[in-house]
Structures are given as C-alpha cells and as structure tokens.
Amino acid sequence: MTEFLQQLINGLSLGAIYALIALGYTMVYGVLRFINFAHSDVFMVGSFAGFYIAKPPEWFRKLLPNFPSLPLESVWGGLLALTLAMAICAALGVAIERLAYRPLRNRSKLTVLITAIGVSLLLENTGQFVFGAAPKAFPTLFPVHTFNIAGLVIASNQIVVLVTALALLGALQYIVLRTKIGTAMRAVSFNPQAASLVGINNDRIISFTFALGSALAAAGGILYSLNYQAIDPLMGVLPGLKAFVAAVLGGIGNIPGAALGGLLLGVVETFVNGSRFSTFTDAIAFAILIAILLFRPAGLLGKMQVEKV
Image (cartoon, rainbow, N blue to C red; front, side):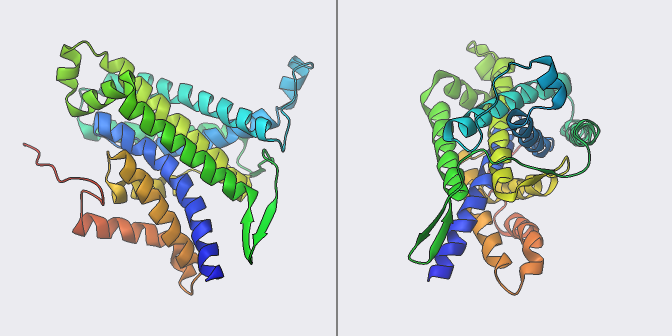
C-alpha cells in the first residue's frame, strides 16, 4: 500500500507539470483552433529564465555590481524567480503571437501549423546558440526537505509542485470564469466575429491568451527543473509532446480536461516506469494518444462537434 501511495504521489507531481503545459495548448486551441507546437520551447525558455534569474551571468554582474542577488533556497526567493520567469515567457508568448501567428490568421491551418513548427525549431536553435548545448545544473530555489510519514517519503519539491500547480490552476479557472477578460476569452472562442461586433478587441484577447498560456508553461518549466535538476535547449521536446497528449486526452480546448489529462498521464507514466515495462515509459503516452483518437476523439471531458465543410 505504501509503495502504491508513493507511486501515486510521484505521478501526481509529474502530472501537475504536464497539466500546466497542456493548459497552454488547450487555451490557444480553444481561441484560435490550432496547435501551437512552439509552446514546448516556451517551457524550455522558462527553465532558463529561472536559471539565469537565480544565477545571473558574469557580464550582468559586471554591468550592475550592486544589483541584489536572489536569496536561494528560500520560499520568497523561489516565488520571485517563478514570477519573473512567468513574466518573461508571457512577453515571449505575446511576441510570438504578434510576429509569427497574427499575420497568418486568415491563412490555412496548415500554413499556421508549419509556422508553429518553424518557431519551435527557431527557439531550440537559438537556445543552443545563446545558452550552449551542454546541460546545466538547475539551482535550488526552494528549501529542500524530506518528510517520512509512515514509510511514505515525500520531498519538499513535490509539495511545491503540487501546491503551485493547484494555485495556478485555481487562478486560471477564476480568470476564465469570473473576470471580464475571461468572459471575453470565452466569447472569442465561441464566435470571434460576434465578439468583435459587440466591441471585444479580438487581437488583445488573443495576445492575453498567449501570455497566460506561456506564463503557465514557464511555471511548468521551473517546477520540472526543480525535480529533474538538469536543463538544456532541447528539454521541452518530450514533455511538450506528452503535454499535448494530455490535452487531447482530457479534451483539447477544455481547461479542466487538460488538467485532468495531465494528472492521469503523469500517474500512468509513473506506474509504468515502476513496473517491468519501464522501457515503454515514453511510448505509453503515444499509445494513449492513438487509443483516445480511435475510441473517443473528443477526449474524456470534451464534446463531439459537427463541423460544416
């Protein structure tokens, strides 16, 4: 029983990270009806933003020698690094939407999809040029403790991941359902032409959606790096693909579905990793993707929609 609970906690911790990334996919799809494959590389940029916020490069220290250092291994220092990384990636998300996607908004979905793949490759290669291809050890942002409760070992980083993910998911749900801009987001998602006619600035709402999704990806990048320590410019590829599977599993375009899909995928992957089928850990996500497309294309919480062609 203890082993089962241990695996469950590990799976929920991993699944919470997948959920944060999946939310970015599902929000953009809900508003624009296309998959932003560059989202996984925004996740990578968020990790490096946290890295350099915690450990500024030498040229920055020479330029601003009196700039205060971030207090590492402290709750406030970790929250500050998380917030700044989210702000940086929010700005990056807005820039990507404005420069790469907005000019193609009236083009075919295939054109936009190819552009998204191009932006992804651009971010990956720029990351290798700027950050270097070698992996870097991610600094310890929050205090590290290990709790042993009746044989159940829980790391403080796992608690940070779960609490932060739940707080961000709750904040997102509040924004979407209880605020004016959230109402506007839902209106643009339902009918962008009608939303424009009633005075909603579609461009501003779409930019806000990209900012929000990119900020959540940055949070996922920081939390992922806290647990797995090493970061590199290609680190977003596999987690990004798995988060996309999570979004499809829960129902692409459905926010609670993306969160549920991420948690389920993390739990399933962790249990498979702890079994004799551990060599198939990465493959299980794509097996789930094939199964969900075959038997329930709308996802667990999604609804089938009839489209006119």
